[in-house]
Amino acid sequence: MTRDTPRLPLSAALPPLVMGTATFNSQYNEDPYALPTTELVHRAFANGIRAFDTSPYYGPAEELLGRALATDFVQTQYSRDSYYLLTKVGRIAGSSFDYSPKWVRKSVARSLRRLHTEYLDVVYCHDVEFVSPAEVLEAVRELRRIRDTEGTIRYVGISGYPVDVLCDLAELVLRETGEPLDVVMSYANFTLQNTRLLTEGLPRLVAAGVDVIPNASPLGMGLLRRTGVPIGSMGDFHPAPDGLRSAIHSAAEWADTQGEKIEVIAIRFALESWLRNGAKAGSLGPPLARSPDADPGFLSVANMGTGERLGVSVMGVSNVDELNETLRVWHSIVDGLENRDENLGDDYFDAPKPTSIPSATNAPAVLTPSDGIITDHAWSRDRRTRILSLAQKIQTILTPTWVDYTWPSPPPDFVNTLSPDHSTSLKDTIAAASPTSKIAAAVSVGENEAMMTPPLEAQDFNIPAGTVPANAL
Image 1 (cartoon, one colour):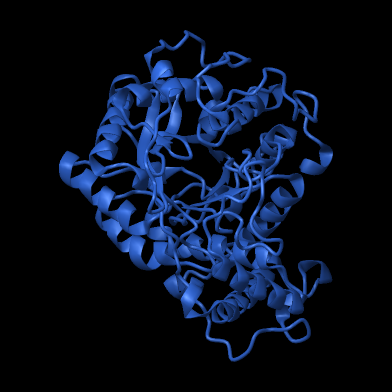
Image 2: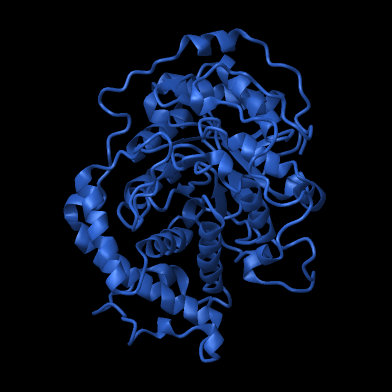
């Protein structure tokens, strides 16, 4: 695409499943450098994932992702135009934000180097609720200027937590600039516990002309887990109050009695329900891309799409087991789209009104395709019925007190504080470096640990360049 080429909407081809990299960070893990990040990215590619979401605020995530993208395995098999890179600007550290045009330009240039790319498919203004509307508007205008004059950005959006703030800002951008945002990403707002993105956000954002609305963090930043919120080297960062955590724990214990894991229920509920419920602001991209060596004559909904928009989700993982579980659930969801009856219409994804929760002894879902009695498509449909039934029970356990509860963001005592190091780094010129070089130039930005540049030698590189484990295929 050149600067003069008419832009297709982001919804024309963005895949409906995006791999998130917020987990490549010390908030979620004690040592992000010890994670098998290159292997995770390789396995994601090998299994049809073609979009990756990251941010400079996620510690070393951009560079760890960039290293994986620079390996021979990716470089020789996947052209840059075959996958999407989504990153962000504006958030420096926990209490530090800079939405100035100067910092926006520097942040974009740094992301290009770190990710070894000549362009970024999407750039969000990160966590917009922490700054003023005027600052967001200024940053959006600067990102669009870069898009229109330099061509290193394709689409511009905003991200954050409070649904009402995201809606207000989307409406402001449209009103003040005459151009809607391409994309607005919300996190932890369409989950087992909270569906405000659907009930409050979707109508307003669509009315504001937003093209794509990804639903990120279907586990509520790790809240919806049997083991509780993740504790990284930065300690307990999660803003959920003790009462909500206790209610989730009770729900997880109940799920155990049903032979289920609350994580699995939460992932499938969010991914599958948003696929249809978020379709008004979804995308036409295929759920799973074809592998480079796939039989060109084999066509399926998985690699061709349904011909209809599907809601977009962003899901992060920290290890191979989590990736495999996410892919297993996603493949089953996609199976449910195969050979879909054209007469089913929108109520295909509407929640049923079961009189009881299917149990391990009476639910068709206990059958599997390997039994030879039920097809992948039918099993997926039956599994969906069970998940929705389980979800309804979990929401009764949470009680109205915690269903759709949202924590304050920013917290009441928040003050935006930029360190002297940041002011110094902002004055520095950006060292010239080729965005497609094999080794990223180390950029000393003078920020705190959350923005540190990793060492040049990858500590997570568990597989030889140009290869992928056989069991990843």
